[in-house]
Image (cartoon, rainbow, N blue to C red; front, side, top):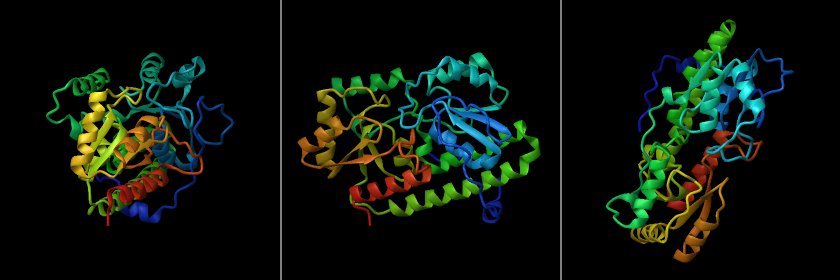
Length: 320
C-alpha cells in the first residue's frame, strides 16, 4: 500500500516551524466550551484527533467521540454527543468504521467534515494463514471479515498514509477559519515531515529481520506489515471480539512452526488471554503491540506509541 499524498505542502515549511502544543486531551463527550481556541473540532477516535491537534495547534480545541482507553470499533454516542456533531465547527471521522458516528454525521450535517476515507484508499484485510486454507476455521475467519465489509480501517498504522490526512484537515480548518490558513498549512507540512521521518525509522528498523511473520490478536496491522514487507497472521479477523475456532488456532500453530515465529502479539485494549494461551501452548513468547486506536497513556502520543511498537517488533522479529 503506497501513499498517494501530493507534496503541495513543502518540507521547507516543516524546517522553519515550531509547532504549538496540542490543544486538549481526548474526551468521551463533546467539548464543554470555555476554550480560547477559535475552532471547535470533534474527532471520532484518537489517530484522527492526533492529526487535527497537530495541524490546528493552539488555534483549535479538539475533542474525541471515543473515550481515552476505549475500544473504538463499537462506540456508542450519547444524545449530547450526537447533538454536538451538528454544533461543532468541524468533524473528522472515518466512514464505515464507527456506525454510530456515521449516523450522527448523516443526521446532524455538520458545517465542515473531513472523512478520512476520502483521502486514503482502504484495502481488504488478508493474512498468511488464509492462503490455501479450506477448512471450517478459515471459512469462519473469512465470514467474520465479510460481516465488517472486509475493508481494513487501520490505515493510521502506516505513517505515510496518516500523513495523507494532514492536508485535507488543513483545508477544512481553513474553511472554518480562513484567517489562519497559513498556520494550518505550515502545521500540516510539519506533521507530514514528522510522519515521513517515522516512516523512515520503520523502514530501516525492519529492513533485516530473522522472521517477517507477525502473529497478532486481530488483523489490525495489515497496513503496517504491507508497508514494511512483513506478513500478518491474525488470530481473529478485523473484528476484535471474534472468537477463533480450534481450526483457526491450528492454522496459526502451523504457520508459527513453519516460519520460526518466536512471539505472538496481544493488544493494548484487548483481553490478552487467547494470545497468551496460544503462545504458551506453542512454547513461544507473548508481547503487546498497540494498534493506536485509542490512547491508554495520556502522557504519550501517536508517535511515542509507534516508536514503542517498533522497539517491540524489532526484538520479537530478531531485527538487526
